[in-house]
Image (cartoon, rainbow, N blue to C red):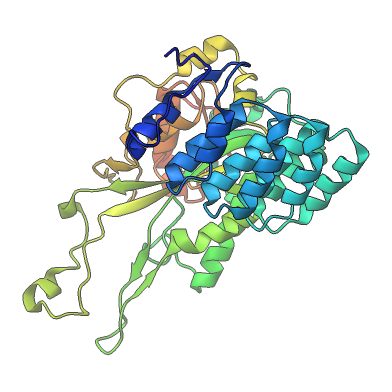
Length: 432
């Protein structure tokens, strides 16, 4: 049989196993106009085996036959499997026929948002019709967030997108600023920064970061991250390195406290307009971290187990956009995209095993290998990379070595001077 232009399926129910029937259905390619087994596909779409039903519907959709509308409508009303119902709705929409409009309008109210989404796709073909436009616009307040997003993109996105997306302000390039980061951010124009990679100060776990409460610490970070969102370009990335923090107990009768910083921040980041993309786990060698398990190792009593904390969280966020990443690619010269391509040997999973680094001045610094990966994976050559809590300047050093521009802010003057030493004093520095 020529599966590229199939006219018959050649399935014998009495001689073939369900497995063989599936193989036949999966092998069907383009179905010719003279296809003779549509009735067989209709029969198979009611088969007891859900996989057979799924592939039968998938092939029925290829026929684009309006005469199937009644069957598809009946089928979606009796089918229980969401995946199959989604394909039935898709088959109705793919007819691109005005005859299908009443069926699609009915499916807009389906309790399964996947069915609603498929119905929207089918109706968008007719969105120039006033009745259809009004029906779809009414979904702006739909319970499902994906439905709301599709409607927003199609009907309510009136934003003016930057045409100079690849550019950044000259006065921000390759600067190290010794000042309060919030004050600096307030002076930066909207959509100036391509990538932010930072690790905020620890909560009351280091001498340089003392806050009067955990709530005030989170509020401080949220205020900064909201400004970073404003100054970040459309659809670009914010990579936040944090980890839960342990505050030692104040006496033998009290327990220590462990604060889940990345998890407490996440909800606020999403609400301010960051879209969660990935979580990357940075794994350190066990000997490099504080030993928490030694007491348990001695007595082995349940409830007292506390493992050694060898990981930190790199939470990857993207500034929400209705534009796909291809839109960003179109803003760059092809030569820049080619030169920025990540070379072989890149990390393929979200667990990065990287040794920590040490510095004679700063007690907690980014390893350059960590910075290199983030900068190469989430920016182009010539982009502006920002670290609001620059520490010892690893982000700036990595940005420079990877042909990016950097903007660093650091309020501690000792660390600020250390950054300049590390960058060999070859920067145009600003001190306010």
